[in-house]
Length: 393
Image (tube, rainbow, N blue to C red; front, side):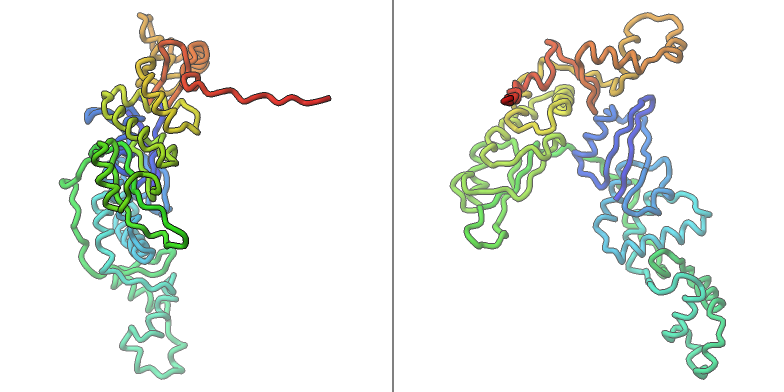
C-alpha cells in the first residue's frame, strides 16, 4: 500500500521498505539503515503506493510505525471503503488548502467509512444536480411537470447541494461523509514492533491423497523447537513423522532466506540453523545476515547452515554501505589535517571502489563485509565450478 525510504541522518543510502510490513521486516529495515537505537535520527519518505493521491498528504515528520498501521488498515479495506477514504482525504484537503494530514487522523478515517455515501455517476455539479433530480432526492422538484424538468439549471442545483453537504468529487464519483470522525486510534497508544519468538515459521499439513481437496488441517510450527515439540505438532494432524507431510506456509525472520526452504526433508537442518541463529549476539546476527546478502541468490538451507559455522571469519563495518562511506571510514582512521577539505576535493567514490576491489570485500545492505582470512562468502560455500564442455572440430 505504501513504498517508503528510511534514511539515517548523515548516511548516504536509503533503505526501501514496502508497507504494511511485519514486525521483523520493520526491525530488519531499521538494521539495514543503521538505525539501532531510539537516539538515532532518521527520515521517512513516502515515495508511492497503491493509492496515488495519498503520498502528497502525508507529513514529512510521519512516524514509520504509524505509517505501517495506516498501510495495514488500507490493505484490509474493500474498494468501496477505499473510495470513501479518498473522499474523506479530499474533504480535509479542501478545508486546509491541501496541507498534509496527520497520520493519526488518516488512520481514524479508515475507521469512519460507515458514515460515507458514494454516488459513482456524478463527477461535476451538472451531473450531480441531474442525478439528485432524477432520483427524487430533491423533494421540491417532485411536483414539477415533466416538460419543465429539462429547463432546470442542474449545475446550480448540484453546486448548492454539494456545498450544503460538504461533499467532494473524486475519480470514483461523489463522496459525502455525514457522521463524526471516529477516534479509535490515538498516537499515545502506538505499539512498537517486537522481535518474533521464532526464526522460521511453518504451517504443516498431511499430503492430500489422490483427488482429495487441498484443505487439510494445518499445524503451525515455530523453529527453533525441540524434537518433542515437533512430534506433538505432527500428532495434531495425525502424522507419525514429517514424511508424507507438506507445508502450506513458510516464513523466515531472516529475509534473505524467505524463499530458500523448499522441502520438509530439510527441516532438521532448518531447525539446527534456527538454534544457531538464536545463539548469536546482535552484532553476530547482523554479520550473518550480511554474509547471506553477499551469498549467491540461490543459496540453500544446507549452505546457509554451513555459513553459520564460519561466522567468526567475518565482520561488518556498519558505518559504510557505499564506496564513498567506506573510503571515509578508512581515511578517518588517520590523523589528517583539514580532513573535511580533503573529502570535498578527493574522488572518494573511485578510491572506495579501488579499496573494495583490492581487499575483496563485499558491499551489503547491512554494511561492508570483510573476511579475516581473505575468503569471500561464495568461496566458503565450496561450490563445484561448472564443467566446461568440449567441442569436436
